[in-house]
Length: 151
Image (tube, rainbow, N blue to C red):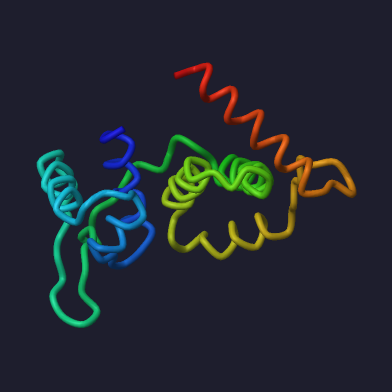
């Protein structure tokens, strides 16, 4: 799962100006030292991660660094974010959150507000009307059973 964590760290750093190593460690449930080793690996891969000292310091990617965003259209990203947001309302899964964050990182900065407005306008709820906590529990149990069978 190290590769997943490395990619998620890159996406988080692309989405935010600065992130503290402790916050990353807490998010990924690893030690701060592991995060610093991951940052070294990311740097070796050619992604320029820098540290900023001081009160508002933390880790960040150099502003001039760009990731190729031409694979998906803006409408593709809006659609995927809307669907994932609806699924996440049921499952509250960290992997779904990571996927949402990865897609957000692909949206050009000048289009972020446009995408946010469109995603917030549409709600895709996968649960039946009038569903209760029991429905969500059943869905979570089903998801866990599928995950155990794949392991």
